[in-house]
Image (tube, rainbow over all chains, first blue to last red; front, side):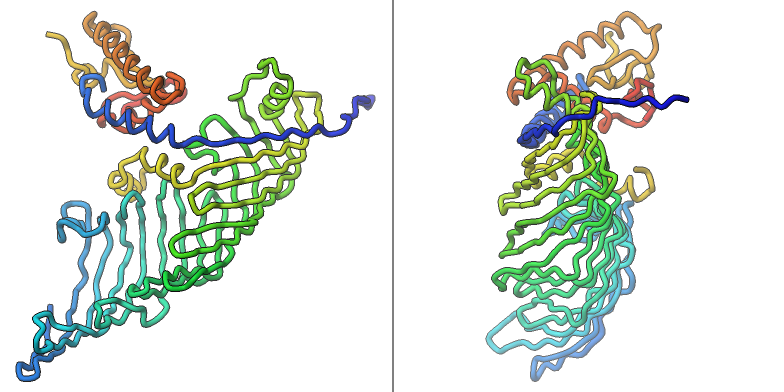
Length: 45
Length: 320
Length: 90
């Protein structure tokens, strides 16, 4: 087979800076509120 | 069974309290069936407890409560149960301690301590260490601790918690921790990442507060990939589009992270990666992500999702 | 007299869908069961929406978390949908 040569050598690396804040508080609150409706409305769950 | 003798004249005495093996099980022979209500949110649902205490007591004149001292030597075998919202299986240890006048216990010897599986919201397995403690201070010292977590090993040659000591510091070593396993716990839905990392986590315990500063994590070759599909790539802000485009499928060859953990539970990871984004014509990208995560809240959210008593029994019967 | 949710579940007609709502496990079900499913899902959606608004999260995320809770709360013998959409009996 004939080797194919790719010319598009990637240029200088790009730098990306990100800040990520992982929110668990919301999840804990939502789960607690779900617990409540699961307990109260037994005809819904 | 107790056998001993009491000398009325000197109102002193001594005796041997022998506890032949008690077997816990979850068909109303759990600890909470024997002792109710329990002072601490703990229950033991399987395993064997037995041993003996050699006690001497004396009744000071104007007192009506005897002063009891002596030694206790009890073995716990394959104990399963839970403490608060943390479940444990196959706990094996020996409680070999001196009972002091103030009714506090202090280890006589350093004893092995093993837990087959500890569930804190995610499983920590094969915990092995030796321990000694003094309930008066309180203080506990662990030596040669090791455990399996996220398919890797965590070890510490010595860990001391001593309320009377100013600070205590030592280093946790992480070996071959699997990032994919960490992100597979339910709290991190929506992101997939692979890679195996080693790390050194210098911990400082001051009073009851644990902190980490200048911890380091490094990924082993060949690195790994990151797939985050949560971000949209037409936000109109091309930097953001590029970032989300890269994150949707990023192959990194190098990863280093600084680890800091604050007394209030905030974990700060500053991650530096070198790699490329196949979707953007293999563009080489240096991706730096500062991640902030509150660990107590993370654990609470993981633990909130399950009934610990049920999960301990389920795991005991092999069902996951 | 309208069949209750639990009776319909025990009869294997309906189960907990992976989207947090009730779904039919089989198609030929009495009309009253279809109405039951619609009523229950409408009320569930209202509850989920309240929680979503209070916590500033998407309705879909609340429903997804409700699914995890529903699976756990499902009694043995009742149907639960897995992530691929197959019906499994717990």
